[in-house]
Amino acid sequence: MWSFFSRDPCKDFNYEIGDLVPGFESHSVWTLHKGKKKGSGEEVSVFVYDLKSGSDAQLEVAKGAVKRLKTLRHPSVLTFLDSLESEKLLYLVTERVEPLCTHLEKLPLEEPQKDLYVAWGIFQITRGLSFLNNDGSLRHNNVNIWSVFVNNSGEWKLGGVEYVSSAQETTSVIHKVTTSLEVYDPPEQSDNNKQRSATKCSADMWA
Image (tube, rainbow, N blue to C red; front, top):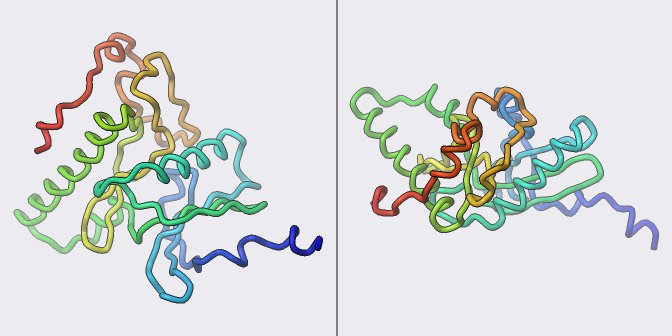
């Protein structure tokens, strides 16, 4: 009986964790890995948080990201597939993606095709942000090149939801547990007048 309750939950995890995607870990509480679904071989991405090496604040941020991504369903938002927490690690499984920064570095397109592609990608991200702001009454608070991902079809997806907050929280201050992200703090965070005057985006802007 006791062996049942003490078994490693990772043994029942439906995904295999593969190679580390380098460079991402310095811009997030997560490390990013390539992965596959057991049985089907479907390619996925696995975000991994080490509970032993991180702080309580970082763990709270990571768990918050899992909860947010479970409920944020939109074509321009990173697609949640599964999650698992063990005694040592927290796993977040999504559609197969790579960070935008990595994707752009190896993009073979030349001008003006590259400009058109980037413009289309930015449009996709603005759709995701409009969804958060208008439909969810939420602020992202962390838009940057490391919170945007590109899937196998070349579609840009908004991720990095660790610091999403309610649009009504006008006095809240977002504390970035990863200091390299502080440069991306929204301007209204340090200006209360901008917080009070912030309004929802018009959906027609992105139509």
